[in-house]
Length: 400
Image (cartoon, rainbow, N blue to C red):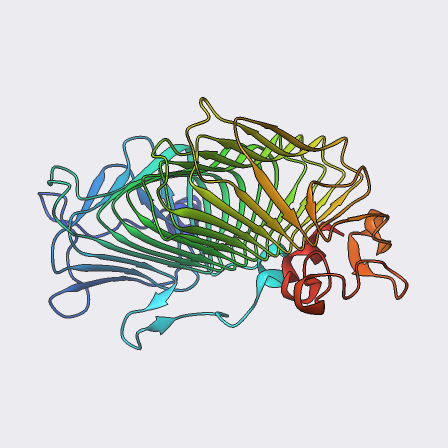
């Protein structure tokens, strides 16, 4: 009887407590489980535990199916050296698994289909040991919870959609990165010489949120970036766009450190800057187009201190509302051209500007629609309303 009970409990222990391992060969290369090229991790009752280096070689694919959990232990890391790393994606149907159709409401509700976890910082790499001139490695994350993960990539293709990230870092060189409908808590993005597209996402609680270095033609669209030290920093990056986004309670919202005079532009269209210490901080930059924005209750809305006065570019400000900032514009060795703008503080230099209360419906509840008697209605260029078109800034509802 005792022997039977021992065997029974031993069986239960093995059944419920043992972990899965990811199949690899003696060189730590993934071993195919479906055909010759794909290693497919299927949902089980136990997580997959990685305690060593796992390598995805060129032409091979590691596909993590719905319901899978991967734990990176000390010494465990994933290196994509030219293959594909697909997470939450059905490799055979070539589309995401699980509940891909949900929007950011689902993400904030904690919905996810796959989990990659590390107690200490865990690393996922691409192109280790390869030249920066070689384009290798593809990463796709759908409906995934990433905790304490560092993604270090070089000349890769990266797609993230419906992803929840806690303590997450990207350090990238020369990749194409597309992030959509995702949530980041305590993140740091260091993006260099890359194409970066961020859409419909929330980033919060970070000392270093997004650094774009020598990265041109990037787009940040309909994002909420809040409680960060430096929300978005452009370092020698040109022809970029920030549209339909909200910057809330950051030490600095948008920081421009471009040293090549008379080169390129930054477009800041249809955004809302709320309660930042400095909403926009400009240092030695190219042309800035600031159009149809609301800058509300910031310590300083725009600060532009250039090192010299040889810059023939200036800040073009049109159809903006400066409401209840302590300082609207603090500028030195630079020029700002305001037209069709409204300020609650003073009469702005330029033409067709108003000094008045914009009469928002309720800024305490982040309702920046205009009351029917607002002086900002049809006071803009071509009889448009001043400030942002709130209908295009869907992300602001997550401030409530």
